[in-house]
Length: 257
Image 1 (cartoon, rainbow, N blue to C red):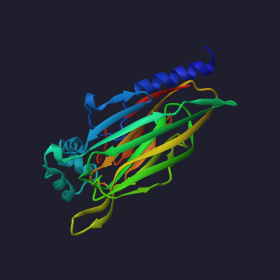
Image 2: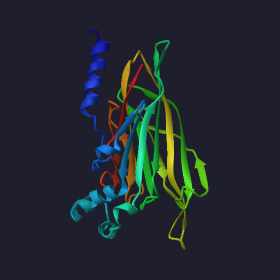
Image 3: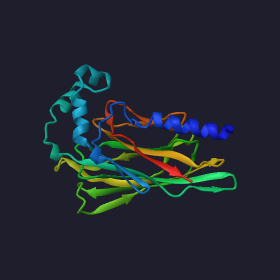
Image 4: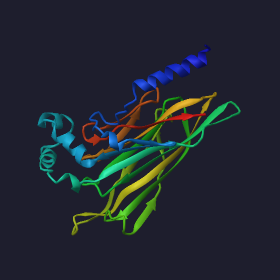
């Protein structure tokens, strides 16, 4: 075996070890029925209800240490709506065929997300995407779709924003301002982001025959400034503040040349 082969095997094994990428330390379990793979697309779904229940299972001390005020802790304790009142967010990861040209491997990946209904906490969410190899971002594009009062049957507005990077370009993300233009009379936002996508083109020197790709969606509960960091190996990411930015398991897929 040459050094390149050994390196690829090591990275593949390393990625399997961290198969579950926890965007937040407080990971919410995802039911088996909510994880599906079809063709080049892997889909995950997690409910806001389960995220809030995860917070409610913590002690007041744990919540305080996580940065919550007494007022916010009281809000968390009093969230008692029925499960069906909450929305679910579905997110995916997929890729276009990998290409090798003149000593460089190119890969295009895409993540999408969609809420079934407007979330109770329409604050700032975040979505990230990465690979298990040394790919770095070349270019990226995004689409964030806002719906009037969170109703998908009403007028919508499509916006875009710059794809941000972390880890010297090995990880990409965008922060999503879920609610815009607060309506005091209706006590809700006029525009609510319920769906969107992020597409990124990556490249790396050398011929990479296989790599893992992953995305995850972090939902903020009473938190306004989520941030993301990626590991040095590019195989995992974390959102902070971890206790108030919750997520499901990663949407994971293998990309092959």
